[in-house]
Length: 154
Length: 426
Image 1 (spheres, each protein chain N blue to C red):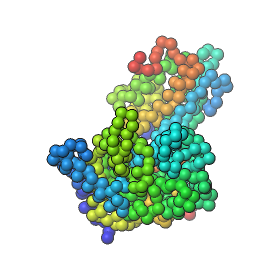
Image 2 (image 1 turned 180 degrees about the vertical axis):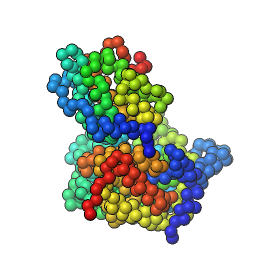
Image 3 (image 1 turned 135 degrees about the vertical axis):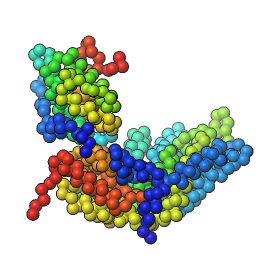
Image 4 (image 1 turned 45 degrees about the horizontal axis):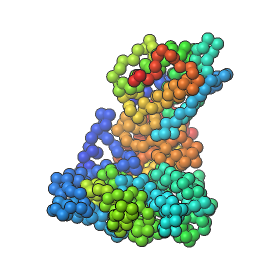
């Protein structure tokens, strides 16, 4: 039953979300809402003493959006903006792939579990909402990569 | 007379298809209904035999097309006990509501510049418009915008815990210019006491508007008996095509309103610096209208009339009673809205403890059951009940008890899948 969508990893992150609720000195945050269902997420970003990303999130939503927030926060916290941008680009490409892309587990780790989501157009937004909030917060805070663009089209 | 659901279903080609490898069980008619072959055939037949622009041209096709369009208007008017000159074709119900909202807005602006307009449509600071907390966004946002433009105040009836309008706290007063309320809530299923609300509106000199999107498709309606001044609904929710909605209004009012859309077809006389307008309904139908859709919708109306709206209503009542009964007995499931059949329609919303509605809908879909999830364009209702969203089952004449059972069984499967089947005491 929808096994392609609800991978064990997703259900695990949904039931046992990782990541922290707050970070000490956030540089920016972004509130995003999915207007079709009312799901909400706020993502805060900051940096540690080495300039690596710190990410916190809070929100309410379906299993896909909640698990995606958890995976994103776990995956990107502690990464440099350049390292993060590579992963963010790969995740966006995966979500736009309509199920035709085999994700690179080396890059995406737990986030490969979302490959099946890209076959359900109504659920892609759920998976992307926290990633979009992160991108927005990064732009606001200046914690973006100079070398790697987040937008494939550029 | 009980409906012969098997033979009705045979009229709807889409209902025999599979989705996700299993037979489709369509329970999202509150969002849009499916279409019987006769409706599709009627549109095709119109295009193949009589297609022309209406109300212009002197050739045979133009005459036939005009006749088809105006006959459709008569059929649709008859369906709700109205006169053809009270029926305005719009793109959808949302446009119909905006048409009325812009009549107020345009009258207010013209009044401000010294033009003579009907004072019933003039709004300013000190005036107010009354809606309810259970409006679809289509009957809320046009009034928010209108109030922002005119300085009028937006007020509303609240909702009680059991999903009814709180009629005790009545915001209508002598300064109310319009009471705009939903007949049957698309999210709660509540059927509101329209006659009483219209009575209160008129007692205070206000006009009354009723959003009938969820009532006209599901029950017999005599629109004059409701006491409303305006009503609207969409074609696609009552077996008709998309792209057509109906505004019903008292003829005298339709003739007094500044038009919303202006241009061709709606004029009487045109000069370079000013123009005069045609009689309603033409004055409110600028441009070449949706003729094929009108023909399709009239065919849908005839299809429903042949079955009998009282039979449709009774059938839906049986399905809804069964659905409510099963949901009430399901641990972990909470009905949002009236949980009994009294004064409620067939749209039934619910939440499932521990599962987000998106996930409930997805698991139901994986078993072929098509339902709506989300805030149903009635976000304030979700806020009122402190929930993010609901799952909604909305059956129609082509559903049967087995569909309802399959839907409820698929909710149980969702609970099992997410490991949230509640333990039942005893």
